Image 1: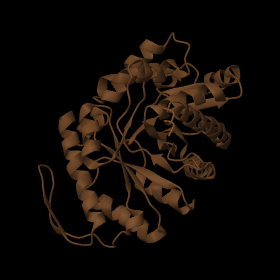
Image 2 (image 1 turned 180 degrees about the vertical axis):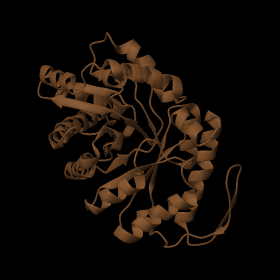
Image 3 (image 1 turned 30 degrees about the horizontal axis):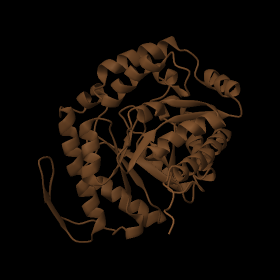
Length: 350
């Protein structure tokens, strides 16, 4: 969001599985325009077997905004790396707009089985490194590319139209496992994970590696009571959702899904802005921060101080929600800078 220095904020586009066919296109356009007006850098577009094609959603977003960058989820099981590079190059040629790629190695095991993808968990990240490297190399040069790896081989493959340097895609890698973090480091990409409660980082004296981001939802209002009232209205208890969540636990081999499930049990009784109830009811796939602007800002500032610089928000309920979130981030940025300056040692007298 504008005015937040080196902090990059992405919103998330609606999922086709959660919106009626008649309303989906207009809903995507609305959320994209809200996000752009709120100053978001970009907008995440999900991918899995049950959703519409993310590249078509990205095209819709580009047609209806002027600066917002689609952050397209890319799964190697769905298309050859050349096809991904061609999409990025083509959009650059059409619109002179930059895209971001959210590289995804895993997914629900039932989805992968349906595609006959039997690659083991850690090997999928080995494949993702090769896959992403080919995309990057094709887009970075006009020269033919020859590449031979464990999973992919190309010979004298050339990308046209050539993508200008300023439109080279930002690369993010989803994955909280060691294999996922290692893949991000190898690629020089932003590693995206799901945060623990901020106090756990401080208690353990942890700092996250450079170039690291988080996925987190936010509900912030003037008062604690108002924020929690909105939160419970938006995410009421749902027994069907709770059962679906339990089933999803059984068919996912993603580290982040297991980690969040364990955190939900640990933080349930705590008086904290960190809230996993929507995740437990299968309404979203990230933790939420809920509370007053000041309380949420304090939590965000603690995340910023331990090193997080990229934040991917949940799907916004409306444009007003993004304004509330912007207020919390503006305060968080001020707090992080103020505390950071206060912690610096005083200059020696000359």
